[in-house]
Length: 208
Image (cartoon, rainbow, N blue to C red):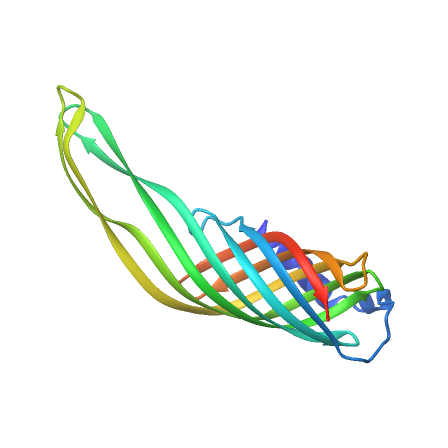
């Protein structure tokens, strides 16, 4: 799914003549704020969600966007322990959580821009500060005859790291009113040692 989305983005970026669909030839500066909620369709942290806010400025068919987002993911990791003497496998669940504060800066191309409908292609950088509470070890005692734990201690570790990478995406807005509208947001973010995320969602946009 991610590979297909990347192909679509690059086709739209480099197909000659795509900008002929642009309906607006105004060279005045335009400002826009968007507030979005998106879900992560990747399995980097077992899926998650992100709330983002962006400020955009554009002129003619190009522009730039500056954004900030808060990402959170909760997942359950199953630690399996085989008991050789009985052939039984113990399954111990660990609830893991990842939190990231993310900043982005993107350049945009605007091949479609009408009075109510706009489509922007984005490509730029992403920076994230992440905290990940994950499995470290487990201490236990298990009664085979009773089939239950007599003691169980889960040990977690907190990993803090910073990540830098790139993002590409597609942002579509529909503004039935002059200054307020709805938008659809699709983003792929690839972070160094942080994984690849595929965000899909939408929210509200405001023309300033």
